[in-house]
Image (cartoon, rainbow, N blue to C red; front, side, top):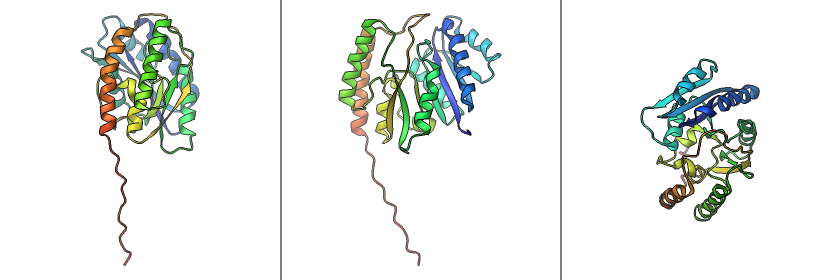
Length: 246
């Protein structure tokens, strides 16, 4: 298949998760028999993340390594990867190793074999999350509130595993934490989004960079901003005048 995919993975202090995640991702993409690249973004890590990525890039040829001199956050890291990507399709994975790269082919099939020409994003749905009960409750509450207010029909917008067209993403407004609202932003542009159930692993190494209180506070502010963006959007219906043949 001539289509090219870029898998974008942001990392911040995830040194122990890098090698197994990227190795598994490379194996999965090889078996898909498509053209691909893996773009890793080191977001100014204080551990050996950048060093390990550079060493791994000598062994895994499709791996590209980008580095932020200053810590910019997950959304900016994702944007950096996508803006530098060469593929027309973008898959995103979290760098903590909790997403399963083996789910990428299912998302790919759902997108490219769809009869809906308006479908531009497949969002992963972690129906059976392998997190602490407090994190699961917090996520369930946040998803319920967001879904009610934004009406994005997405049960798990926070899942890092997504597949979409690069061209579609580049039309979206950029702001910090935008990665948590991608389905709603894509729908704001007039496109369709569907969710596909994906597997989820417990975190083996490292620790989460957010707690529930931080997520709640930031989420409320961001949610208000996205609601404002949606209310302000307007898609005109355009009719082009056809000239007479005479």
